[in-house]
Amino acid sequence: MAKRTIFEMCLAVIAFVTAVDIFWSIYLSESLLLHEENPAARWVIYWGNRLEINGVALLCALKVVGTFIVLSVCRAIYVRKPRWAWPVVGGVTAFQVWLFVYLHFGHLF
Image (cartoon, rainbow, N blue to C red; front, side, top):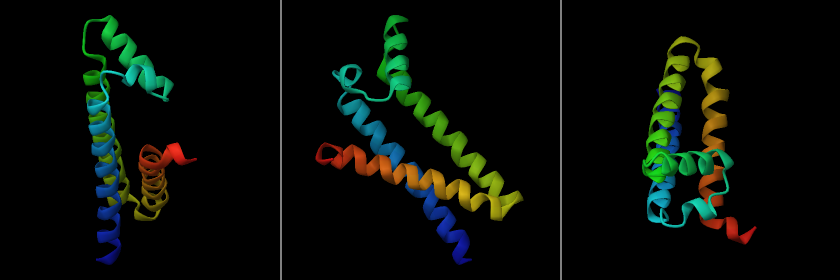
């Protein structure tokens, strides 16, 4: 039971950091194309704007879909091979925690 709770908490952290990231994307939408450091995100915003779709909205939609896929895959792995799920969810959670720290304290590094 405790392992399942920790697993679910990791998934919650992943979802929470995605929500914070989307918040900042929307909050900074006017200047996001100029300040975005991820080249793939810049590409999505640029092409979304070129296609007369709001590029930031497209980026946020892709973040939601991507996070849903990641959480679904993590859960599917956990159901089938729990021992394999721990390195996967641990790695994704560690990356999300790093992203959260970078988004809020990256200017200090």
